[in-house]
Length: 423
Length: 161
Image 1 (cartoon, rainbow over the protein chains, first blue to last red):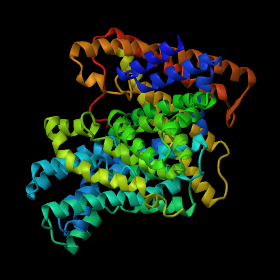
Image 2 (tube, each protein chain N blue to C red):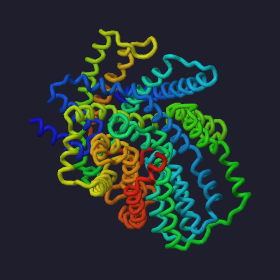
Image 3 (cartoon, one colour):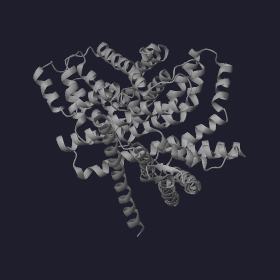
Image 4 (cartoon, each protein chain N blue to C red):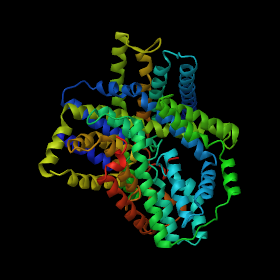
């Protein structure tokens, strides 16, 4: 009976039932079978109010949505162009860097494709890059930057992993540091490949006046990264407080200094961003209950024993992990994937001696690629919708980029030092 | 009539979300400033911000509406219009039942915390902080129930923002 219900729940998940309902059903079924009062579900849900770090999510998300509503993407493009446009294949490099930064600021919700990609695509084709290459760039770069602070999925991984209390303890600050080199590696490899393949000419010569102009235009936004990171690493404020300062700062900058976001629009922006936050944290809340059931039932331990019976080397395990995560990344939203899969996979990975921080970087690097993995990666559909191209054309355009990023992924996976150099 | 109720509800949701988020930002920033400048901060401040997060979560989830929640969009994307609509009925009904179940069991929790006088933050008892759970899940349950009777295809927008 219980088994039949469990299969029913999985089937409903595949048929498109909201994930919060699916996870809640699984938790209820598990606790019911174990004879626990189901009031445990709201009790666990209330733990949302007991997790200080979680407060950072609405703040960073809101700040990201405000920047999307303003002309931040345009200023960011101009600034990166003035800084990197002179390099060989300058424009694609500008694209990679701008997309990565914008995604880090706004989360991998596909908004980068709409906000930055839409500016970038006509520039690329006008500079002589093929349509196919340009489409591939804007589609795949829509999730580049997932590993760069203050990316919300990175924070979410930290919260979920810390709840588990397995493996080496770590701080969110360490997780932020760990993502930097792998993200840089991806950008460098994409740029290098582009330069080799296209031997691209610089798009714009370097000019001081242009840079001065771009810096001046971005003057209210430029201090943001320094003061947020400075605050976090100097210990002056906690991450949730840095997030609150960011939200306030961005609000003041875009509404009162740049005057690009009318006060009238704020209610709509708050609503949109909090709908996203609510739907993510609700899944997290019910997943806390489900994870508790799993741990009580010793599921991660059994899973580890099961996996270890057939796979003895960490290397083989990592390959398997990459394959599973790539598929998951294509099917699941990054937030849901982190919330649901980390509790299952982290104890197994720790059993193979993998550091939780390293696992987090592997996890997100995979999901980043999963976002444009055919046939159903979300970026593909967003780009298809935004640029009015058939999805099949985008599959082909993304493949070479995917190849480069898969090589980067292998390096990130098998060279732990890239993520853990400071530990 | 039903449309008027829906519109009023939408306005209440938006108003509450704005008020809660601004209060959270205000209190959190005040805490940093007060701690670093005067060496003190509000004793109930951090607790209030965290409870406000629970409220934002529940009200945000409620405002997402039946189509706005994260789901696995595999079958639906390739299904025909007719099949997709039928599937939506089933999954919406399933979700409605779960929302009502959450609402029901959260009432149990509230009754316990009311009887025990469990503290929430500052002078506010826990049961008041918890009230948002049955209210929001009840509204969500009703919306999913209504959606399960309507002829609509599930699936959210192509991009989230």
